[in-house]
Length: 189
Image 1 (cartoon, rainbow, N blue to C red):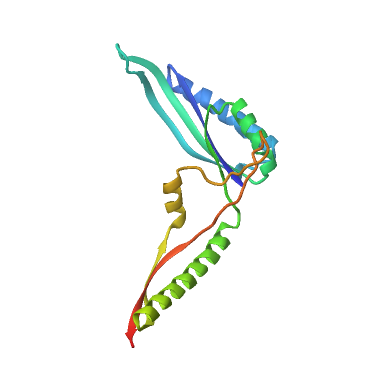
Image 2 (spheres, rainbow, N blue to C red):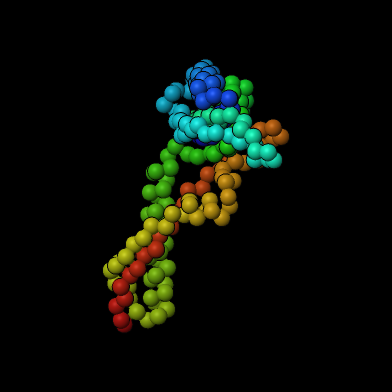
């Protein structure tokens, strides 16, 4: 699956006009999405905002009121990605914040990764305990490490994706990881 993040920005002299032209674009985008078989439940409005817009040059000049509506569109049919994105822009979205690929079974995959992380931590701790001439006691502390957040902070927003033929938007692999910090008590000798 993929998540498309798009927004509409419209600036008009009066707030009501800015809302009206933005609302019109929102309605056109909703119709385009319905036309592609994307249900309303797959679209979330993440932000609706109105603010005054200024040119801060000399002299400072009031430009109008900027209305912004942001969306996250969850797309399960990856073959439609390019067409939907183009059609949404044609319908009025004038900002594309990105496309993020994901898997629908992430919760189950994350649970498997966590179990594997605990097993790996136990194995590593047993190796250290043996090298130190002690035995592992019971677990006294477990802390989940949000490995996805760590990965995203190291590599920015580039997630998923893949290489296909030129012009192709083909998803690559999605890596689901888990990390854990475990504290064991130590039994001497």
